[in-house]
Length: 221
Ligand code: DX5
Ligand code: ZN
Image 1 (cartoon, rainbow, N blue to C red):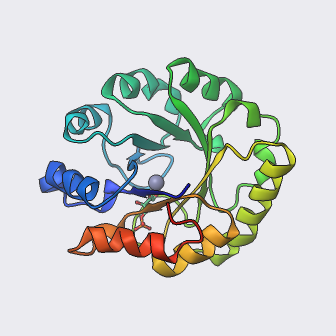
Image 2: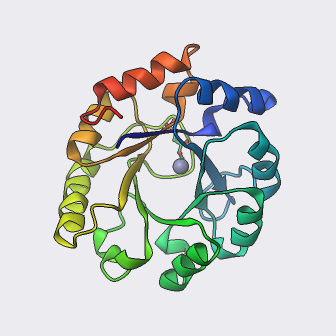
């Protein structure tokens, strides 16, 4: 299955509701929501109140990417606001195993987001606790950065690790610098969910932008 998750970080925030309706009509599968605290990453976005305000605008699942210190303090409010998936960075969690369990206890899907330098070995003893791995193909904090091709071997290794452990059900999502060209590379290497901000929101015709990602990918739907 190929999932397209437009990142609203690149949307026009003065018209956020319309932007979300537009990408839903254009064929998006999830809405990727980047929460940044200006500590874990050098940028600041928004929190649960805005997630709650955009919840009635769309039926699509909210794929929330937490780039915050101590992300667990936000989980109850994000669950109440209508988030569906929560991904956390290991470096921001003192007790990652407990943090992942807390996500699932709220009935949400749990993900681990790995910075470019973060080894896959951090996943070894927590695979039973997760539904998704988010491989950062840039350093987190900003949209519009250039894809790091050195993440392609990491994707291949992750795909092999999940196959070895019989956990092919775990989704492999990529985030950063995804466009039609890089979509081909990452899906070939094992990704099955693509976050794309600038590439989708930067085009007038979002339906053709999303269609071009699917057309370029090894998996089409
Ligand atoms: C960056 C965010 C990304 C960002 C991707 O820290 O996690 O989701 O929106 O933006 P593009 O697709 O423009 O690289
Ligand atoms: Zn993100």
